Image 1 (tube, rainbow, N blue to C red):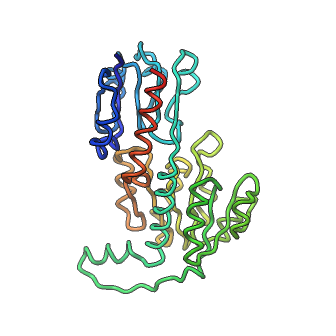
Image 2 (cartoon, helix red, strand yellow):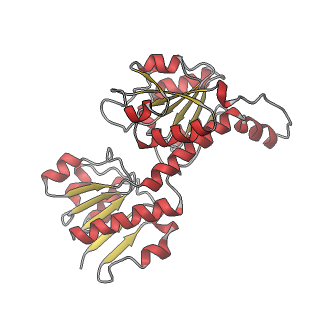
Image 3 (tube, one colour):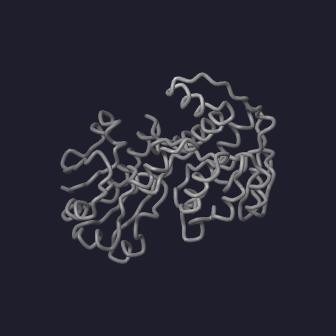
Length: 306
């Protein structure tokens, strides 16, 4: 028998499907949400054989507290919150999960952000909640230039959706991507040039040492009368510069599905309350098909490894 800790809230949304897929002789502990408290996390990890996590910080301290731990499965694609090197050093296997359904969902969310922006939905919603009835001019897709930072699967998915509606696209990547070029996006070898030639910039890069704060204070200064979409990770944007821009420049708009702390702490709560910020609760991959696909893949890994 194995003891398994499962923290992502997403499991709760598809619990009936998941229940049928569990190994009867194993013991499963569902927390139904992020364990932000490090001490509590260490306590829960102390005697488990495997863990499926969301955004919990799995560092040396938490790993050392888990004497029986053999497998860590990240409920998603990125593992920047896991000390992978140390885990592997002590014999713990680390896995992440990629799902086409999640890619499709985040691509659609990016399109929703874009359409929200050109129809001024956030402004109309704000005005209506205050009892005002004000009209704003819409923008035509043909006049909007969208810049993609990164050229992975989600960027490609967003590109295809946007092209169908008549938007124009460019992209910045370390290298030209033929599959993106063939779809008609213009390649920029310099991030500053991409931003200057875009009305909307959408981020599609993982958080690494090289990409942290890639949208620097200097780059942010170019965002007058522009929208920045972030479905990547909060810290690919310089947070001090971001907050300054939001405070000082009404024409800068920030739409995000990701925050530095989730659920949001005080600083993020201040951020998402600003009128030129529109925030969703990291829901790009929160559809039945995406959650089920990731959950079943996670449970498959546990079946094979335990």
